[in-house]
Image (tube, rainbow, N blue to C red; front, side):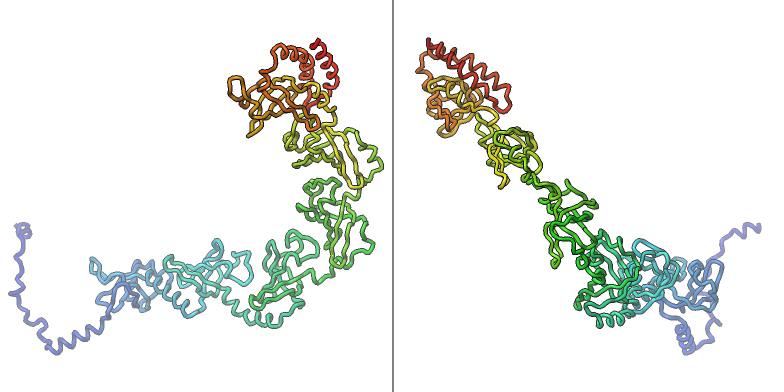
Length: 598
């Protein structure tokens, strides 16, 4: 029974019938107003999304209870106070109000967000007021260091660490360093700081003093702070100067590191100074006397010198006799050959060679040298006229082709010209490239020798007898020959006759029996109208052939057939138109013609 009573629902309580007698009746209206005002003064207005100060009123293992003057206290995870191991009740800290009342009616606070917002405010304030900040270097990164300022990671570029280049960033890790904020990017939460800017202010006064006292020719002591391919930068005590690679040594060097090293102390002389751009040009070799001033007086024009090749260019090579004293060996002075070649075919850098002094100017410090002078000039040889007498035969290499002929090198320094008209008896060669190529070997005969002017006229066709003496008997006026049309112009056509020679025919003389005109590629019988031996020209016609009796044609062909066949065989054996056999066949041809007439 007792359990059933316990399970029965209680009747609803009527609050309206309840008596409030004795509850708050002891306060008058004035007292009530005064108490409400006192209560409101204990509460401070709090807005969400802002940083406020709170007092620690309680600490547990997991949470810290804070009073921010609101109607309720806030609770923050103790993990957010790891950086404050000595936190105790009564301490004041800054927190961020995330929410005045969550679903459970709790005030939501965050110290982590408060630290971030406060840090960015401090960073912006430091940037605006140009304040120096103490930063802790956390780690090295590509191109610089990562430092901690106000709990925010900032980037310190390597170029902003010091006025001189830093080669080892690791030495700064874990140390404290004074910096200034130079750039803020809120979009990427990026902050850039500089330590160099603090050093530069200290050096500005020292730099200005150096610049005020700077003069050309002044010798200063400096330290090499940076090295490049074109020179080195030297710290003169707050101001930098450039020592160009050409002003390091009187001799040639490939890189400044050949003679200098980083952090090396040395004396330099001021060569030039630009006050506006604050550029200082320095020199090191100027502290030493010029090597040309101590050049041995025994070295004169015609002297033989020995040295090292220090540079090879398209136009020649430079021979260093001693550091700072060089002479130019022009490519034309490397060989007696008149055909200029690449200097690298003769020598390379660092080769030790000898040369002859051609010109010498000690005041201008210039010298020209030659190596071909170490050997005898082939054009002054005593046996030259006998060796290259008119009519002698030689073999040479084709070195150059021109519109009017080709140049053949018979030996180094001895070149000769073969005119285009002296290449072939039978072919009309418009350009030597149609007959021969560069570097081909060609046999020639000497036509003319002028040793004083270094001229040698050569011929190739003169290796054989003139076949036109024989052609005069073969291509008599009125004789008929099978010819092929190879080209047609406006007025004349070019024909290919037997034995590889060419003839011409007027367009009107290409008419055939059916009234049409012969075209390129057709082979027809043509009659010789003119034979011009001196001009090496044969004029023919096809129209006249039909007027010649058939029996006479057959007899003429039969009489010339044996001789023509022999000539053709000999021509086929020759590469360059070797027609010397025609002279021997001339008499056979004449005898055959006589027999034909009989």
